[in-house]
Length: 311
Image (cartoon, rainbow, N blue to C red; front, side, top):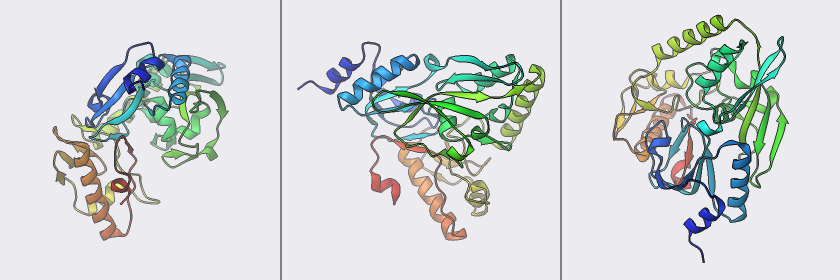
């Protein structure tokens, strides 16, 4: 019987990174190795790759910039597919009066905003300073400063496990707080955003202002995944954690940021398990104090024990 490497090689003729450390593909800078890592260019390559992997029963996982994942120290089985710079095409859509853009999932949010400013498309400035890519932002319904992806996204191109891509029109009802209602086996490959006409200089000014506001409140020069926990209804996770006296709490190399309590940061030598233990400790103490169960925003990927995550 062919080995896993031989089977993966039969699915992809291009470059493959074998036993690839995921530390380089996660903003938390933790995680073991993927059996294989592949970076396709464009929807056609991605669809063909996923179709062949599925036909050969090879597990696969799609990530973007890795700004919202916690990869297991034991790594990820099968193929990790990275939608990055080679998967970041931007195209104009709409009219002069109602401008928009069609964006591939691997495009970073800073690049999207710079492109919009250059083309006089306003309405997406609330994304300024949020790490990650378009695909992840859609799946998480990313938002700040009173804006959310659900307010500006009109259509998403989705990939299923058979490698089929469909375009689906979306409305606010398709989303929830920091998430969307699409089944988890679908992958975002592109999004169509609707904006409004604006002055490039004013768009840049608003983006810079939002970035300054975020930097004033958030930790800098440390590895993090952004906000680690979802805000409970009517509350702020950071406030609950801070009121519990947990700022600065450290487990191994992972720490509750002294700058913002809803940021768990890597002090330099953290493991994924350090973050898991710190997460559980924060959840336990906040629940004991306030009776509120904090749920993580980050996605656990790789060889985690399911009971370990859920208990």
